[in-house]
Length: 227
Image (cartoon, rainbow, N blue to C red):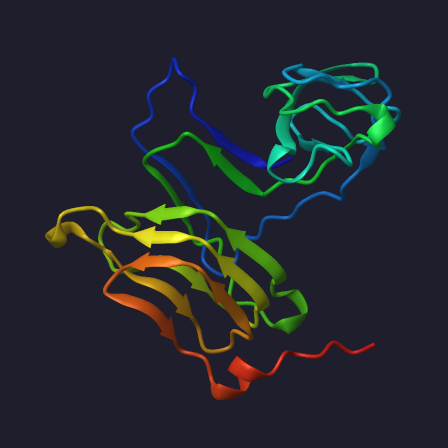
């Protein structure tokens, strides 16, 4: 199950805080399950039927796509009900997911996600990991990252640990608050042990565009995994 932050139209949130304990809090995702769809899923439909419902539990997030419906049209929704092999979703399908196009459902999702939110703070979860458990082969594309920080200077994107082979592409990073209130003064911060990072087409509007704290060896050499 993921930690889903969602703003309902009938509720008003002033501040949502997800706070861990530094160096102790670790979010673990359960093993993913996958199943082909048993019945075609039509655009706008708020349920799917899978061939094998094992592991598709109420409260989990699920991604649904096919050979024709994928990428930005992949639907990611929460399971809010189940009747046998039929799963009720909290988001409608974003396209026609046909059995003939190998449509499937998979429990892949971010550990924390938010939709249409303001006033959200996430603290003491993003870890300074060693190579074996650090992130790699990740992409962050087409995001607007703005107005972070309240009481101290922040970076729009901060990469830590022995993270490597990351692509940051077509992101816009800025602080639109009055000058005296701006805290997001660094666009991208790469800490000392971070490996190769590719920057492509980012629009950064901060005092410091990229703060690169890496050692020279980390900039040019990809870590090699043992066979």
